[in-house]
Length: 314
Image (cartoon, rainbow, N blue to C red; front, side, top):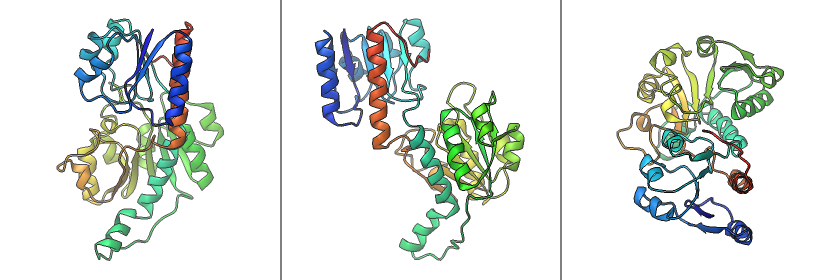
């Protein structure tokens, strides 16, 4: 079987070479690339004669799927909204992901963004480098009500960290999790969470049900000067309306994800909004997470080659 890793996994090359050797000893052909493919045509060319594609977060379209002979798409990412799952189903292609690889990395950036907003890192920079004189009086997490929207693995890890800071946790999820309750989280309606929280952090996957989940109505429910943190997916939030509220000094925000992948267009409202600390979609991107991710996707691959399916998403 031919296996193609078409995007770099950002780990020591020795690790990839060791897997290549192992796969070849098992009788398979393994090809990998050190730079991501640019566009459908290049992806299709890289997947010529391949039955397994190992990919990261670049768009994997119907056009690609229908012009390859894949049996498995092994996604080195948690979210798979960049893969046309309907086309995969129609072509009997299994899609697996690397769920869990960046739980700690994302959760820690959530805490970092909360602190960055509460301690006014955006205004610190202006005072230091632009000779402004902004008020830098900050706040602490201890004693704040934090609303966690989505209590999957990352949401639960965020709750654990927030409890260490002394926060009170409100939670919203389709089903209540015993672990969240044991950590002291109180499940409430989305409306109550938005109205009562000093900080709201989003941990939902992007799908048809969650696009626009935090829209104008929901943002208007939030407390004056409260903080919205989004390290999940950009389109879950109405970012144009969020930018409006930020510029009106009604909300504050820490944002790692947008309606497009960076670089962000100069006219994109969030790029120029006040009261916001922005990061470059880096929540998942740590050395530790990259190594865990590599281990998961190759484990997925070896199991598939042995007739087992793990981390299936379709």
